[in-house]
Image (cartoon, rainbow, N blue to C red; front, side, top):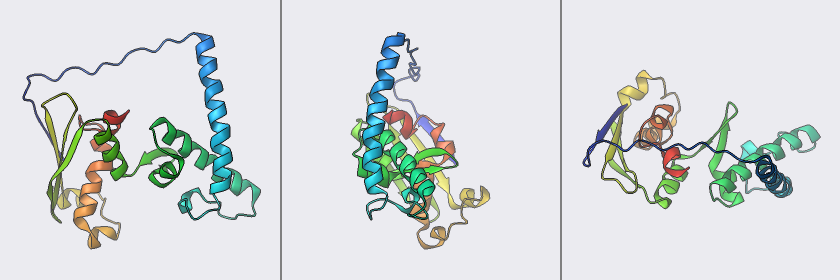
Length: 195
């Protein structure tokens, strides 16, 4: 994976991270709000996990097994709450948020949509079966970040075992740029753009 940043305005401005200090009362009110939201999300999730509107990952393996239903409802509740914090409606959250090894993730199209909704620019510069390049520009700057990944790099990293790499290689390379862990550590990180 190749990451290139073009600085047209000189040095990048440092990221500002503030320390959040809350009073105990404020923190408890925030927890109460989350508990109320979680209760509502759980009620909705309990109704939806048996429907055709949620992916298999949020459905109980055995709908008659109370423990399996409880796990499915808990996972769906978490997705709904995470989606709510991102401004998503519950059905979109259930369709676009997934969990791998206990860590939530978002599909590439949702990441791009959230970045663009926040005023950032994201575009595909190159899109072939051999190579893909995605560019991003944070709102309010002239700096452009280009991330390129080649099929050879994907093979060397062991990412091409999925049969979709044979059927739609350009799409898979593009998705790698949008969702891969190394991309999250670059200035174009969609998670940083959006959150």
